[in-house]
Image (cartoon, rainbow, N blue to C red):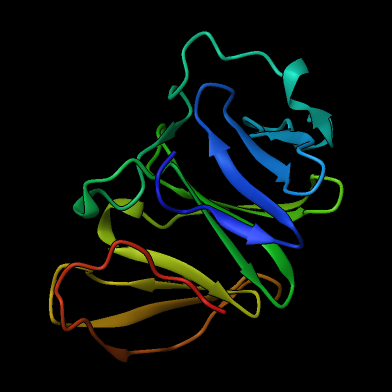
Length: 178
């Protein structure tokens, strides 16, 4: 659901809210593979590369994740991103308003790393990843705003940054990197 889907290595990758899973649809074969979003300390218990037909819908979807980027008003629960390092997923945790970032091996839908970041997703307008660095934009509904947060996910350190970001149309619905 939402507008944060990606095309990567011949596959359409998106979030299925009912299954609480990231889905990879191979555009050539139409094969669908799922990676369920892990809860708590389940990282090593989540099976990789499951056929989506074997992943059941959750009884109460939306219990773990909540809407990202509320100022946009859309239905983004998982913001998928691709950079030089591959596939990433940015999510908003409902229980504590933290931001969850996952690094995924797209070829076999394997969860490689997960970061629970004490960044309140309600305080940023949008996020994107470039070269393994998570960036956050203050607002997406203002003409002049700033990128003030940069977190190197591999080195686990903040990067001091304050970049001007101009948004001439005052309503950005999606930021990405290519």
